[in-house]
Image (tube, rainbow, N blue to C red; front, side, top):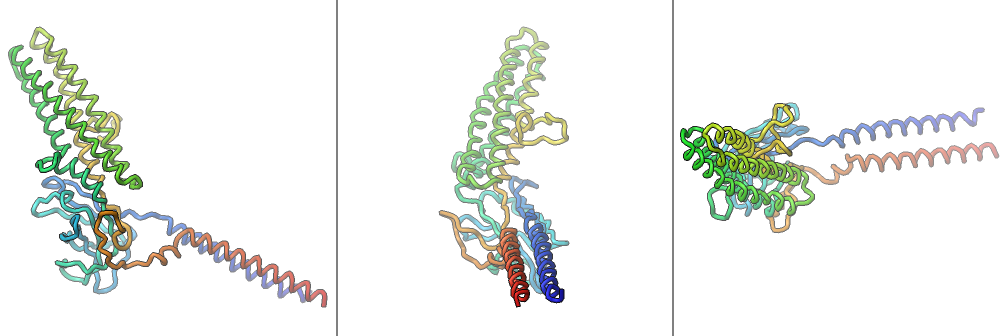
Length: 371
């Protein structure tokens, strides 16, 4: 009996070690599997694209004397725009930058980085020590700019602004028809609206630049999802514009002012839906989805295609892009060691050690018994 006690103690000890390793592995793996939200999104405050909203969680506090600062970087890397000091509150960052000059932040930048800087006022130059970064590939941002900034090249407006303008013009013509007192004036203004619908459909066709952008980054889920949203609004706009055109045809065939205006009321509704969308499911929001989104929602979805989804460390390499090669504040090997994959591997190794220990115990017992 005295021979078995040491072996039993060893087995119990190994079981406790295995339990501890297993529990620790599960906890760390669960923590590492929690994907943080870290984005920088361009939107409008005073002028198109003049605002950058940075939202992050699970951000570690910086050491004493250090702070995080955000930077937009131009396509060629020659221009860095400091968007301010990023304050960390309970691991979260919520920072809004609005361009004082009203600059459209999509037009000149395709990279966003967060660097570690000495505490104090925002720096004029970056330290080059990256905490987080992301680039929108040049081939992607080019098509996004066609949607939002300029199309065709050297124009002053993008596809969606032209689409919104043509819809607004058609709506104005319908409203003038509704305010007219003679049948001739009603018909003339209604036909002007119908002519403008041709421009609406032409501009809507150019929303295909969203699909072009998605094709340039097939693995980027943010670009793909929002390109799909633009496509959904495009289908809505085409359907509603065609329906408005049909209603105008009916209206202009009427022989009285009142009957013509009744048909134009429907045409007006379709055109307003094509511009502003409609809350089809009555959930309180108008989304860039089938049967809801219009040109305004296409605009928001196109801006979201240029979202910076931030990763730890320096900018990744990109074909044709600018790899600045600045140092990172993290270590990829540390990240791997804390990953769920490495924890699983550690658990397997620990199990093998326990099994091996058990075999040794059994052999020891046999040897002692033989003696």
